[in-house]
Length: 275
Length: 128
Image (cartoon, rainbow over all chains, first blue to last red; front, top):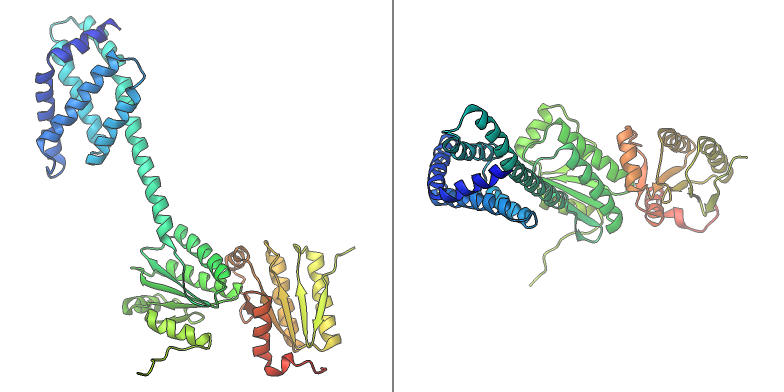
């Protein structure tokens, strides 16, 4: 590993040169992919960070490496760089450092040098990749949880009347959680009528309709009534064109009509007060 | 020995609370008992409370459906009450919709439903 020190020394000595070369290369690479929205300074900063990381991690003890690496990757993730781009740029860095150093050596020495070099830089790069993947995974799982929280709220609006507004595409997984929330909510709130508002559901295909019908059947079994509200004209058209039979389910075109119907079913109505 | 499910008479209604998971034998026995009881008492309404049931298989569901149809033939209206959400989901997924069956959230609401279905007279204490 005596070569490692040599490399670090080289990097430290030629830092400015490497930084310049590398960041220019990165900017060139990135411009081929996407519209350049990131200023050049950011590239230089990132490159600088990486070189710092390399130098400290090879001179320092193992201890604070991990936190440094995770800090670095978090920066990258926030910038929205893809993993592919990072891998490319790190290998680019390798080339920039490697070729000038290995220039005047014999072939045998070069092979040895490659091995040493690889041994030196691989762990750091692998750690960066791992951290990157981990950060992404964490983000995705957080978003999944957030989505789940948003996916199926049940709101009691009057005694015995609750409403579940649905927004966004319904897939099988979501339909399941909708159904569970709906039924548990009906039992908890002792609802007599449940309104399912599908105004915010962009597409109603056979699958979605099937889930809605199932949900309303289940609601009936639990002992409440279900009204589907917010049927937009295009949804009505798709439903009929697809030949979906929604006759067992009560439907209304707007939430307002639905609430009126629900009140009627529970023997109440809205009246205006006289002045 | 098959465990029997108690059937209680309340005015002109029959009350059944199923407290444990039914096995096939008990279900069949229950079907017989209930029909016999309807015949015996001339009850107009039946409330079957399933609050304590967490699992229902397709056979039990079929038996329940059958019992309900049979009771209807004998002139008694049946209300299922307290079906748990999990049970409802299972039933729907099994494709058992128990169409035309009255349901209610709990016993109280079930009795109200029956009262409505049978007309005001149902709850009078007068003899049947």
